[in-house]
Length: 302
Length: 302
Image (cartoon, rainbow over all chains, first blue to last red; front, side, top):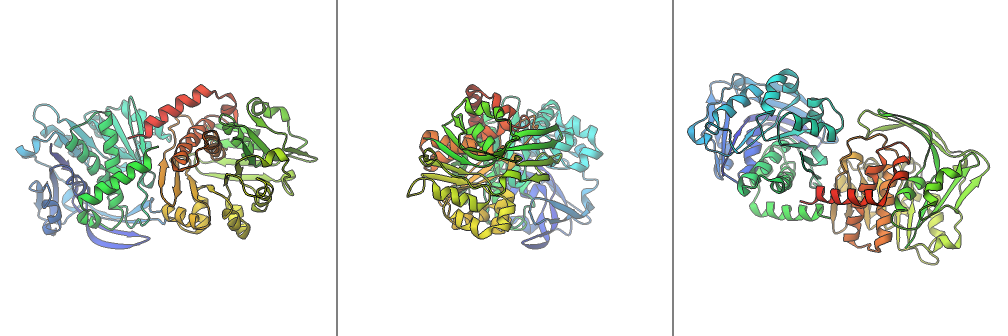
């Protein structure tokens, strides 16, 4: 089963205690696909400007990623710049240039509507709605997951809330989960998010791992111990790529499938932080993934 | 097999976002025993002033805890006061009065020397050395674990380092692990701590769980999801109580035993945070522990 991802393809400029990358390839759809392609065919819907070097996405195309849904628009590509604190967990955005991303109206081709699995990366919830309305024919597709951020929680709350009622899984970071339902306690926050519609919530906690919450279960994974964290940018989308990738490949969307997907998400995210941009994901092999997956299982199984 | 714990019995005054407790029963040896008594007989070595209400420890004496090693000294009991931030994870100490704790020279009775398991709670490392030299007869006992804090890492570094060379397990919080070896990355920090002598390091991360590191394995548990955290004071010592308790009861001090001990430590700590002081631990039943233990295993097993 294939996956449709709608998100960004971007230029990132990142400063971390370990170094710096300028105008590097980034974006939520890029990180997501770079991970998910190891599990299932991926179709990307995104927009770039005509300044974007398409051959930088060759590593995706070589393996299960179709970027024919990538719109190339007159103008500049979306740019993000940020700086990480010494703890590598806190970051501040130093620059955002929406450029061609503003006014992005994704149009799905027939092939895009066929996918059972859809990931709506962090975007204007109005745009997420539009994709969802176009996808999956008359009904909605099998598993829809979405992400969001503080900007939309504050600025487009109504649209976001009705969006949450249309998705199966919300994948969100801890700070935003707290903000969304105004509760510091993550256990209560996750339960309140379930009241908003999704049948599962995945709370990403950076170096502290991630938790999965449904009406019936609570499941937590730590992060894989990485002794050399270089750049955490994109770790959340990489997690989502491993998570959705596993669900699509296994076809198992029950509770046990979701738990296993959490492990795959964590493993993929752990690779991503080992280098700037998508460098580590681009060089990754299937053997490395399965080795680390097995080691990680040992590390978390009592 | 029994456990010897050397630590503090204290009056705590605590303010959290959920309320306040004044002059409540606290101290590392108190929390430790309140948890460990569910697993194995515990002998307490500590000192209190003659202002301390001994009957407040009746709940310990009723179940496997021997406090005949509690020295009662003319003067006032050790007092600690602190205040927690809204996130319940950061705290600041607002008052410390050592009182009878200053100049504490523990003297072990013959019965104390018999224990195979020793927990040296956070105390002056010189005092920890002294206890260790008295315990276990000519050799050192089977499993010795210790805790420490920023104050000793800075102030008594040499004594602390030679102490680490005498223990099997260091149980320490994340901030202090980083401080001890001056490395922000916890994976590297744990490995460097192993170089200092202990064969295992347990890094406690509050609401983010705990990790165990040996030369051969890395094992992580999240914290049990508690929807109503009232007071985190003593959670680390309660963790140590469940951890050492399980080791003493099972007699299994191999890697699998250590992993299982991590789970027990987390379960016990999760109860402790549900109320001020030792209230929750005092009312706890064996059934509640085994229920939560089983639920927790489900939550962390992929």
